Image 1 (tube, one colour):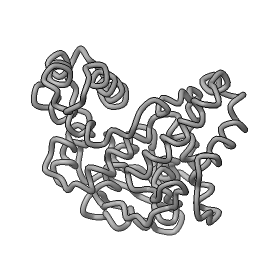
Image 2 (cartoon, helix red, strand yellow):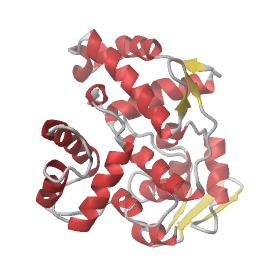
Image 3 (tube, rainbow, N blue to C red):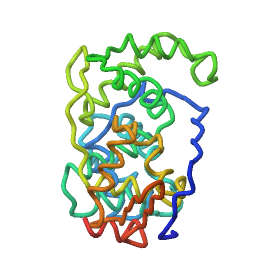
Length: 270
């Protein structure tokens, strides 16, 4: 990871993923289950052993082998890069470290929201509604939005109305579970405060991978997953300097340096 970049002027926007398979229609946010599985995976460092712990030992305390296996498959899809070799991802390190629960939960939300369908709906529908001052969001609103764009995406155009309706409902429930929304039928935008540590986590995740400059980080669409605009992002990045990063803005020039050389060292500093 390079430690320093000078702002060159303007950055490039990342293309949206074209695969929008609404897998959330058949699953939940699995917040507690994800924590339990990834913590167990850290302990055993073997996927075969993890599968045994989930299915046979029933560490999730679920009723049937099939249900346990379905949960494991979905969490594996979301958060485990390889079954053949144990890899400690930043999220796994967060969940196995002694960090505050709110920090862990918002980092988990960020990684959960990288699912192409979740990311697309949040950035292209939910964030604009939030910016417009919309007070409530219902499943029907998301269904209408999906129908308006479904012909452009193979993963959506062949889905039944029932699946799309379930995906919309499960999406809203998941975001309520993570704390971005609140309410039962009609969901309202919750008042949230993303911890400094999670802001730093996202900055480090972006910097050197997709973002090559301060502007690339500040203007990155991932912040919309937290319903944050660029001015708020810039303010929050200032807030975590110099504890986790070094950020300076002088005129039109911005300088962003990572205080820690790796994500592991950053997480250890939490």
